[in-house]
Length: 296
Length: 296
Image 1 (tube, each protein chain N blue to C red):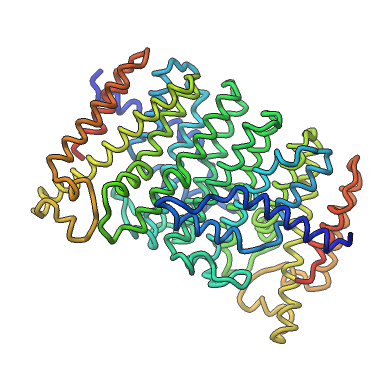
Image 2 (cartoon, rainbow over the protein chains, first blue to last red):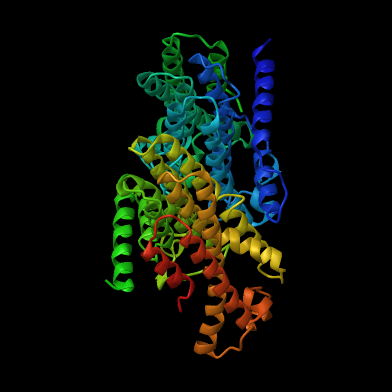
C-alpha cells in the first residue's frame, strides 16, 4: 500500500475512534452538544492522535482499543483551541476548512461554551481509561501529561503570548517560545502519552518528547514558508511582505532559504532520533516527512 | 468560637490553600498568569472547597494536606465559569464583587484565555494528587467525578441551557434542569469528592451527592428570593417584576411564599440526610443553614 492510501485509511480509523466518544445530541443541552460535534467533525488531518497511536506502536503497545480515550481526548483539546481561536475577540475567522466556524453557526456565546465543553470533556473522556485494562499508574502519568502540555506552560501559554504580540515585531526567543508552545506542545504531548501508555521508561518518554518538539517546530516553520510561497503564487505578493503588518515569522526573521534549511535540519534530527529507538515504525517516519515537507 | 468567627478562619485557610497552587507570574506568558490570579483572588465565599473539606472530615478523612490539590482545583473550575460568564457575548458584566471583571482589566481575548487556562490548570493541579499518599484508585475516582460534574451533563450543560433560554419563559422542568446543573453540579461534585477521598463506600458517595444537589437547589432558590427582596428594598420594584423581562425563577413560577417554603423543605431534607451519617460535623450543618438562609 502506498503512503497516501495508508494515510487515508488511518485517518478513517481515527475518525471512527473520535466519533465513538462524541456526545449524543440529546437532552435540553442539545444545542451545546451539536456545536461540539460540529466542530469535531469539520475534518482535519488528525495529526495528534495519529502521532500518539504511532508512538504507542513504536514502543510496542498492543492494546490499541485501550488507548482510544486518549486519542479522542487529544483531538478534542486541539479542536477546542481552534474554536476559541476563531472567536471575534481572537482571530475573528468566519471560515475554517471551507466551513463556517462554530460561533458563526451557533452564536458567540455557544462558541465559547462549546470550546469550554470540549476542553472539559476531553479530560472526562480520557478518565475512562482509569477503568480500562492499562496499568493505572501509567494512565495517571499519561493523564498528568495531558493536563500539563495543553496548559499555562504549554499551548495556552503560547497562545497568550501570540495574542499579546500579534501587532508588533518580536525576536527569535519569543517566536521560538510561541511556536514551541502553541504548536509544539500538543505534538510533544501526543507522542509522550503514546510512549507512556505503551510502558516506555521515563528517559525514553523524554526523548520522544524532544522528537515531538522538533516535529512541531519544523511543522510551524513550514507553515510560514507555505504562507509566503502560497501568497506569491496566488496574488503575486513579494516574499517577506508579512513584515508590513508586523507579523514576525521564521521567514521574516531569516529569509526563505534559511527557513527551508532549518526545516531540513529539524526534520533530519527528528528522524535520526527515531532511528535510535529499538523498534522501527516506517509509517511514522513517512508521516513525519509528509507533515514537514507538505506543500499545503 | 461562634460560627461567624469559625467561618472566617476557614475561609482564610482555604484562601491559603488556593494561593499555594496559583501560578507564579513570570515568563513570557506573565499577563495570562496575572489574569488568572486576578480572577482567583477576587474574594468569594469559597463554598465549594469548604464543603469538600467538611465532607472529607465527615467521612473521617485525616490527611487534609493531601486533598489540597482538589480543594484548589474546585475553586478554579468555579472561577473559570464566572470569568467566561462575565464576557460580553455572555452576561456582559463589567463588575463582580465590586471589582472590574477579568476581561475589563485584561481585554476580551485574555479573558477567554484566562478562563480556558483556569479550567485546564484545575485538572493539572488536581493531578498532583496522583503522586501523593492517597490511594491512587481513590484519586482516580475523585478525578473522574471532577471531570464529569462540571461538564456537558453538569455545569456547562446547565449554563448552555440557561444562555439559550434567557429571553423566554420556561417551565419548571427546564428551570430545575438549569438550577441542578448550573449551580447544583459543582456543590454535588465537591461533596462527592470529599467523600471519595476519605474512602467512603459508593452508596455513601451517592447519598452525599444527593445532599449536595438539595443544598445546591435550595441555594439557588434562595438567590431568586434575595433577588426579589433585595430589589424591593433597594429600588422599590414590585415582587415578580422579573416576569417582565421573561427571566423565569422559582419566585416567578411559584410566588415568594412558596419559594421560601421550598427552601425550607430542601434544607431540612439535606440536614436530615446529614444526620444519618455515622459521624457528626456540627460546623458543616451550621454552614448549610448559613448558605441556605443567608440574607445576601
